[in-house]
Amino acid sequence: MAQKIEALRGMDDILPGEVEKWQWLEEKARLFFHGFGFKEIRTPVLEYTDLFSRSIGEATDIVHKEMFSFEDRGERNITLRPEMTASVARAVIEKGLLSQAKSLRFFYIGPMFRAERPQAGRKRQFHQIGIEIINESGVVPDVDAVRYLYQFLTELGVQDLELRINDLGSREDQKKIAEKLREYFSANQSALCEDCRYRLEKNVLRVLDCKNPKCQPVVDKAPWEAIAPQSAGFEEVKKSLGAWNIPFQIKRRLVRGLDYYNGLVFEMAAKGLGAQDALAGGGRYDGLYSEIGGKPTPCIGFSIGMERLFMALGNTAEEKSRENVIYFAPVFTDEEWFQKQSPSFIINKAIYELGQLGMKPLQGERGLKMDNHLKAAIRNRAKYMVIFGAEELKNGEWTFKDMDNKTQEKIKHGSLFSRIKKVNV
Ligand code: HAM
Image (tube, rainbow, N blue to C red):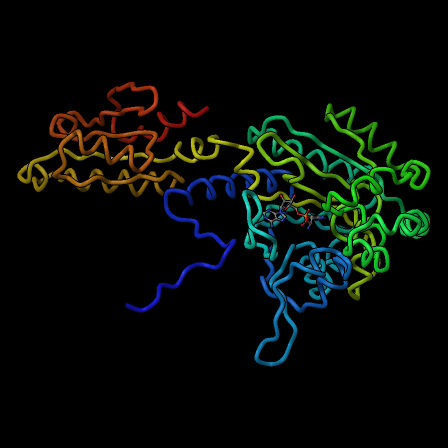
C-alpha cells in the first residue's frame, strides 16, 4: 500500500460537525461589524515577502523565525500572510481606496500562517477576525476600536475578559525610549539570551517580548515609568474607556510583537487560555502606510484569534451553532408517501424555505423507526426535531420537539420558522 499522506503539523482540517461553530462565529462577526458600518475586505493569502518584513519588522519573531516564505517558479520571494494588517494597507494603497473616501473601516475573517511550535491555541494555520480603521486619528477611533472588541467578545459570552492597554508614544518618543532601553539592556547584556542580544542590536523594544525565563528578571526591572511617560492622548483614552464602563489594566511592558505600532496598544485575555496567550491584540499604527510606499495614514485596528476564542467560549459556540439545526423525521408507509397530496412535496417545500431563511434543515430517511430518527437527530446535533406522519399530514400539522427542553407540541404548516425564532429570542 502506498504511504498515507497526512496534513501538515499545526494545520487542522475543520470537519463537518465542527465547521458549524465556525460558521456561527463568522456569521456573528459579519452581523456585528456590518452593524457598526464596517465593510468586509478579502486579500490574497500570498504576498511579496517584502510587504511583511518592511511593515512587521525584521527583528520581530514573526519575520525573523515564523514566516512561511519561499521562492516561486518565477524566483519571486513570497510569503503566506502571517497577519492581515499589512495586506489591507497594501490593497488600500494599490487600489487608491482613500481617493474615494476620507477614511475607511474594514473587517476581515480568514486564515493566517505562522511557523510557531504547535500547541493548544497555537497553530501554524490559524484564523483571525480583525478590523482596521484607516485614516482616522485621535481618541475617538482609539476608543471605538477597543469598545468594539470588548462589546463583540462580551456579546458572544466570553467570560472574565481582561483588557490591558499601554501607550507606546510617538515615533519620536520611541527613538528616545529605544535609546534609554539600549543603555539599560547593554549594561545587563550577560543576563540576556542569544535572541535578545540580536534584538538589542536590531530593535531593542523586542527584548520586552522575550518569553525566555532567563531574561525575565532583567526585563522586569527595566525602568519603564522613567523611560516612557504616558501621553495626554492616552489619558483621554483612559477617561473615555471609564465612561464606557470598560474595565482595563495599564501594562507598561505591553509592546506587542509587531514593529508598526505607536501610541495606544492593547491586548485582551480571557478565562481558559494559558497565561501568556492573548485572545486578541491591536493598536495604533500611524507609520505603516509610509513604510510600504503610501502617504502617512493614521490607523488603528485589532485581530482576534478564532481558535483561542473557541477555547475561551467553551461549549457556548457548539451550543449556539445547534440552534438552527432542525431534523425532519418522516414516518410514512410507501403507500402514504406516494399518495396524491405527496408528503414528500410538503417536507421538501418546508426544508427549502427554512434553508432560505438561514436554518439548517436535515431530512431523515423515511424507513427509520422513531428510535433511530431520535438517534440520528442527536448525532446531527439538532436542536429541534419535526415528526411528520399520516396524522400530521391529515391535520396540516407538524409534531415539533425541542430536543433540549424535551417538550413536544403540534404546529400548523407554515409556522415552523416563527415558532423557532420565538424560542430563540
Ligand atoms: P497579533 O497579536 O500578532 O496581532 O495576533 C492577534 C491574535 O491572533 C492573537 O491575540 C492570537 O489570538 C491570534 N494568534 C496569533 N498567532 C497565533 C497562532 N500561531 N495560533 C493561533 N492564534 C494565533 C496581529 O495579527 C495584528 N494584525 C493585529 C492588528 C490589527 N493590529 C492592528 N490591526
